[in-house]
Length: 247
Ligand SMILES: Nc1ncnc2c1ncn2[C@@H]1O[C@H](COP(=O)(O)OP(=O)(O)OP(=O)(O)O)[C@@H](O)[C@H]1O
Ligand SMILES: [Mg+2]
Image (cartoon, rainbow, N blue to C red; front, side, top):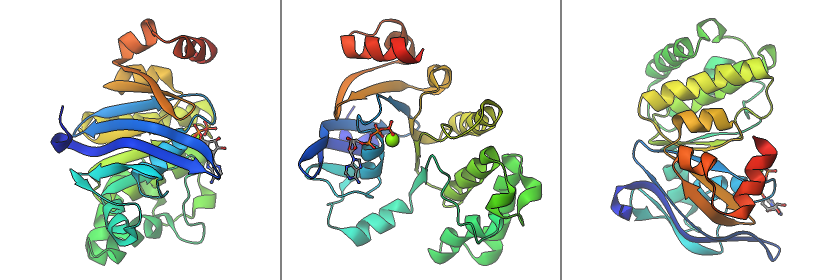
């Protein structure tokens, strides 16, 4: 498939931290409606990759295109605008603790001039309802469970009507019961056709929703494939070893 149809595309991505190569020539395209799951050992570069795709890190070589248009690393204002179209969900929810759930969700769309305060309010309440949190608009993050906070974080990203959602281990800080609540919301998004890149070790979920699973090791994409093939008959010894550890 060509670059033109990719919502997000990375070519030859290199990211170094003090000379250490966190990403060492990564090519990745995420097409409209596609769900790409990214797996790999700790320190392999998964978070770095997600952060680069979102312009939260500068890159040392290669290029990133959003909707076919290259956005240079230094173009901070362009990236700020691009991020309005890219939803991001972190492992630690990153909600503003001093704002209510409602304010957490409405802040960005109002600030960006996307929605009027009334529209933002309505959108937030509708989305909260959809993730089973209709009664929590006026609560503060600390009053919610981890799973509830993460669902609020997802709603906050959705309130901007993003073209693509990036998730970095959204359930790895959660207890099993809450993991399911959050994965259910992500399943809903997948059924609704949302384009997503998801770093996760929830392989059952990956098998179910991913179009492609990508294995990254030491800053390189080592193997990529459709879930069945990827999980059942991994080719590279490093992926075999990794799967043996986590499955
Ligand atoms: N801000 C930073 N400064 C220096 N080194 C960093 C920084 N962020 C990441 N690194 C290094 O880059 C490499 C890749 O890190 P990254 O966080 O992307 O890995 P990861 O695959 O997300 O790991 P994990 O599964 O533990 O979250 C690691 O060696 C890490 O120590
Ligand atoms: Mg990480």
